[in-house]
Length: 348
Ligand SMILES: [Zn+2]
Image 1: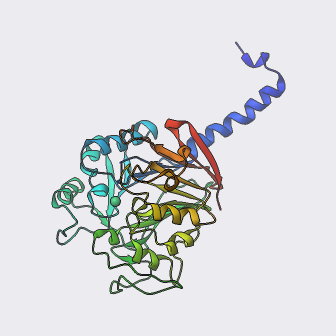
Image 2 (image 1 turned 90 degrees about the vertical axis):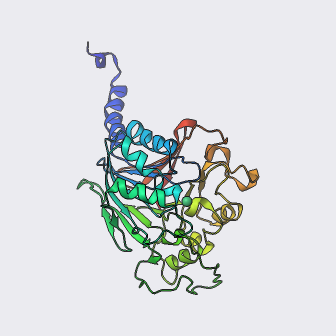
Image 3 (image 1 turned 180 degrees about the vertical axis):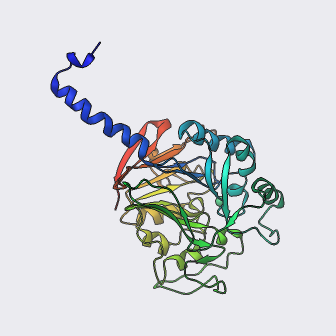
């Protein structure tokens, strides 16, 4: 039976016009999933061509690997993870890899280089498990490296560029001291001797759209990323450094990024610190701040509005935040699918 016969012509025309556009948008957006690993990091990027990049893998054990695998397999419909970056060697970033690799094939591994010695802030067992999983075939990233992702010819170019790794930022020599005075109102923090300072920081660009993920980079190196030259530039979306904690998120960096949307991958009692939250709010370009978790240690005024928080309770369902950039890169949608909340933003 031809149902179209019974539809008024205007309705039919509207359907014909609307449907292809809708299905194209659904299948060809650039998607970024901020997976809830309760104070760790796990950011899954899926390109319009279906290529995937996971930045960090949550804590060791089953919970976070299962959540990442669920989003990759069930939500994003992937069969494998093409690229995996571990920003640094802390357990809330490298921990999930061995279990995850049993749940979904992971093809290429990248990091800032395996440690020569196990420092006090690292745990040998997790680095050993990573080495076994990668079979020693991980690629060491340096500032300036590119992870090229396929993009169909009719779409804007898509690339992930390393701007910081191993304690250096783009254009620097390895001998540079961690604290380098620069800028008006320059303020240094005591030297960070943890592996946070070595985090791989990447800038993803898709046409005009820009997204920065700095892992757990801290205050002094954040200053070097934007002074004397802003190496990141003005961006659209900022994955707030170090789960939104105060030893990171130097106001000099945050104000230089001019992000319209901030996404904090915090846990119920880790990250989204009050000073950082106030810094993000004070940036005049900020249109929205999202949190994976309500910070239960602070008050309502130090948290974003309820409609921007994916998980309210400590005993949570692990709700993720999804960001979809439309095929031309000119606008994007941030949604919390479990709460059926979705908002659209213009690329700057
Ligand atoms: Zn961390």
